[in-house]
Amino acid sequence: IGIAQVPMGVAGPLRIEKREYYIPLATTEGALVASINRGCKAITERGGASVLSVRVGATRGPVFKVRNMKENSALFDFLEANKDGFARIAKTTSKHIVLKKVETNSVGLYRFVRFIFDTQDAMGLNMVTIATDQIVKYIEENTSAHCTSLSGNYCVDKKPSWLNFTRRRGFEVWAECVLSHATLKNTLHTSSKAFYETWLSKCMIGSAMSGSMGFNAQYANVLAALFIATGQDPAHVAECAVGITTAEIQGDAVYVGIYMPDLMVGTVGGGTGLSTQKEALSISGAKTSQEFAEIAGAAVLAGEISLLASLSEGTLAQSHKRLARGGK
Image: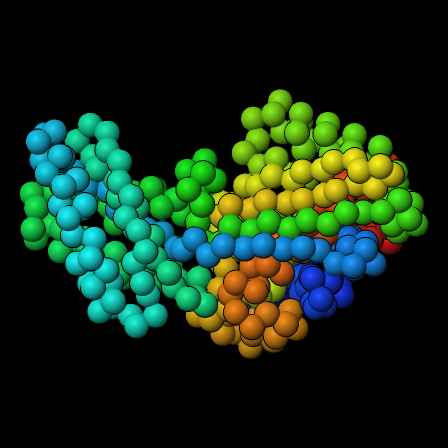
């Protein structure tokens, strides 16, 4: 019926290894773009971030109901014996999908199955849902089990969970850099001791005290703006923001690292084909979904650095007052 407009900004350049990227951000929070931009500057002037990523795969997790433990055990045996057949069924639904792994667990009369797929450069949830539906039909035709839900929350999709943290989902991403004394002083206006103390008290102890599932400063803030700008599914921020930021004093410098075990992104399909989002993706410079995942990881690192620096120097409220929309 129309279009909901969100202001767009671009942060950068952000150096990753030997290349420079730009970070498109759609957000109503004016201070966010400025904050990430400052983090990008701090990383870039130190020679760039180091980033590592692993393609884990998209998942779909149906749940089956059986009548007793004997049927449950028989279903387990069937799943173990037919993994190659499941892979062939998945391939009939799309030439771009490959079944990589099948995991299962049970409680009572329910057996949960986690199918893990490689969806190439697509985020791929539509693909994995269609493929899983066909596999489920095959299982029902050849066993006494009944699928009560195509998604039984064992995926785990769009919800924070320790299963996705320990088993991982989408892409697993690490990013790191070392902030020198000069960068801390001149660009971030803080010190190694103040930065570290803020990280320790907020990200570690504060997160533990509150029972937070994310030991970080603001992953969700950065990811939401990046996702909306580039046509990702913003609901995945609920799971993707579960990650850990680490810091360590190294002389008068500070090492900062981020870890995201569950990053669901793609560069084809879904909202990435919309004109504005397609243009934003081109601005980022990402050629593949894995490259985009690494850009996202470095952007999150930039956001962590800038916010922790701002908190450590006591300028967070001042910055929001000066940069917030309608704050004049």
